[in-house]
Amino acid sequence: MRAKIFYSVFAISAFLVLWFVISGYYNSPLFPGPIETVYAFFSILATQDGWYQIGVTCYRVFVGTLFGSCVGALCGILPRYSKMAEYTVKSVVYPLFESIPSLCWVLIFVVWFGLSEMTPILAITAAVIPFFIINIWEGVKELDESLIEMAHTCTRNRLRILQKVIMPMLYPYAFSAFKTSFEVAWKVVILGEVFGAACGIGYMLWISYEVYAIEYVFAWTLCCAIIIIVFDYGGFNYIDRRYMRRWKR
Amino acid sequence: MEEVKGKEVLRIEGLHKRFGALVVLDDVSFDICQGEFICALGPSGCGKTTILRIIAQLAHLDEGRIFIHGNELITEGYLDDLSVVFQEPRLLYWRTVEENVKLALELKRGRVSDRDEAVVKKALSMVGLSDFGDAFPHELSGGMKQRAALARALVTEPSILLMDEPLTGLDLRTREDLQDEILRIWKERDMTAIFVTHDPQEAIYMADRIIVLSDRPTKVKEVLKVSLNRPRNRDDQRIKELEKYIRALFGYKKLE
Image 1 (cartoon, rainbow over the protein chains, first blue to last red):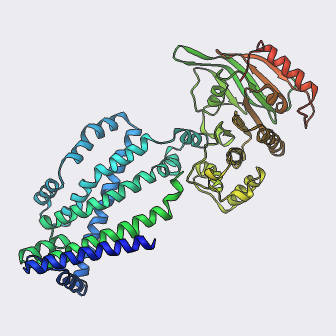
Image 2 (image 1 turned 30 degrees about the vertical axis):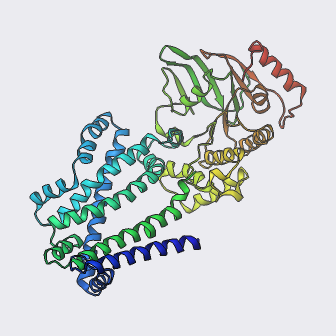
Image 3 (image 1 turned 135 degrees about the horizontal axis):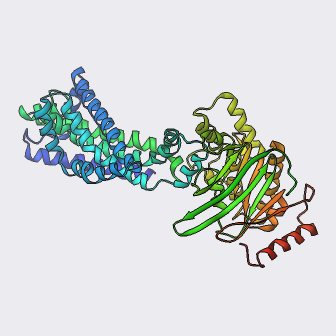
């Protein structure tokens, strides 16, 4: 454990030193060093507006992923109940969402909704839908039918069986979809905000780039990276250790 | 006609079941009375489980009729009356033993009340798993898992208990212990039990009557009344004689 911490600290320090040396060598405002970046980063955190921009982006990621998860999960589970749904999802819905690049979705939504809240949120939704479809679908194929049959001896209420037996069997697949989708959502939200929003981290990145405040481009990028790391290690890994253990047989 | 123990609970009339061209059940008829312990005995793969699955409405019948308490089995209400114990415990692996037992109530009623918590505890204590309520299925032995499955079946207080070779695959000691446990619970609860097995000795030890089924297509070969007093002794010579008689019915063909 101690060795692990040592190697991590060493790798981070080496990266910072390298960054410091290269930026010092070029000595250009187009390549700010770690000190300028960290200074810009804290100056963002020192203002209420900085927190507002971060909050707005987090909100969009959350809502977009939630919408995407609902639509994707539904498309993943419906084939179990209907052949028609299976063919529709297999031959239309999944290929459509899987093959269209996120940038295309962003441009389409900018045309439809302009610079609005809907553009980045729907771009995220469209981007995460295939992850939920494929994961839930995989889960549905792996369902333990003997447990469902057992439930049928207690009730004929299919909704209750779905809620108590089928859905819990799909939790690990949904969790895995959430984890992947969250990372994708962060990449897409920045794209969506650069092209189709008037606030948020992506928008601030774009503004910083426009005025050549490259240390702020770096600082906003650092914000994204820190949020993703915090959610991934602090959030998903915690949930995995604390709650998902039950599903590991 | 055999002497009956009480009021008729379940009547099966002319059961036919085909899987494609394969005739599995061919005119199977029998009835079961209140408080009776019935064993359906037949060679492996003969269709014993299919009969149980049809009663539990997990499989459709092609022809025939089933009556529970005199009512034809067409409505959902009957499910409150019966519980099934399968050959495999079928426990939800993400739920603890207690949560698994509670599941039957949640599925039947939608939600569980405070009173039900006590019922769950009682069912667990009945099968000797009071100290294992917080354990997960993977932490239990085969016999304990089957006990948990039995508790789940008992928690809804069914009047009919269907058991599909629940002791298959367990070691002899656990198997005999569980046979006694099942008989004790059956007596305490005054339930009607249908127990499917391919082991003649198990059937003779447990049953009031044995429905001896022929190999496919399954027909009722003979209905044997077991007039031995309870508790029975496995070493009783009469059990061995009856076993010999049943084996002779199958031409000493291996039943397992």
